[in-house]
Image (cartoon, rainbow, N blue to C red; front, side):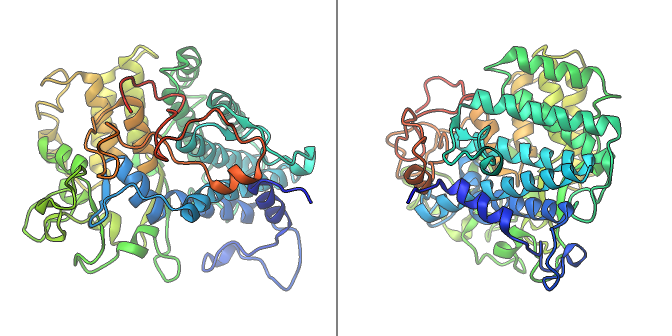
Length: 490
């Protein structure tokens, strides 16, 4: 009997299942006693929830990539944990989500609902970028084609190929939204509640994210995409206000509680291992950032302190439970909280970088300062405090010892709190903030946090096309991902 890679097994099972999409998102449930074809909008909802549960769940978002990004940490452990079962489940989770979204797109396309098709492909491309940014080369162009092409064993695409496919998918979706499309997205739209204008902005904003991420390794393609979007805002609008943010908000009633709250929700006591990281706390404190008390809670000594990685991290008295700040209430203690797929402040920082690097024509300073305002406003900061913050020497445009581009990178990274995978990717791409304090088990061998996630053992075992040219050193290092052009890092 032939063995099939886990991706194909998942796709087979997903396409055969008739499922109720959620527990208490009642309006999109289907009657289990009346077998039927699952509506595309229900499958879309399942894909959105599957994406969120993997990307924004506590294990990946707080412990793993949160630590790698320098934003959160686990006290008492504080390590770059590796467990085969969890690593397998994260890889599997991304492909489950993408399989649902491909299925939703197929059903929508057959029904002539081009808007739902475009929405499903937008989220699928979103997941595709996350997956390749975490692991590197991945099955993508041949994945999800068992039924129509009979491909049993997925070929692994290099990241350049994956990025080209992502841009093509998002461009197709963007043109559908531009034309007005046909049909409604329906009750399965858990992010924008059927607002096509917001889907359109989200899609084009994702195109900008893909383009800026690849801009150091393929500047020609990146510049072409960025120029098209920013040069024609009427045809390709992007997210410009916090009302545009692509957030999944939770009902807040058990069992539909926001993922961080499920682990961290308390009455304010310090009972959980997950806390703030020294890298982020230091960046906020150094510039008198008004977001500090929103991102973090006071430690038990009445101050703000983050967990610091290093060879002596477990013996450092500043790393004990009483001395390390917890994660702020807005992010950790709201059962009706949110999973942030993308926010508009990131888009402003992308614009600022594009203008500063001459990838497009525009006012970099205005875009940069707008990004800060949008991030601060989202976090409840008043106008007077924002104005004061913008005068800080290492924040104000053209002042201090850091370049304007470095300021853009740092403020973008700060704005990505709770989007840990994205913050980690930005840190790997820019080396800002500079992180040289490495977890105790690896501090003598490496000078930067992990380069990537280790491939799933089950994929290595089941897929004969698994690439043999990718080096995995100490699990997390070795081969840098395609767009990570840093030198002298190990």
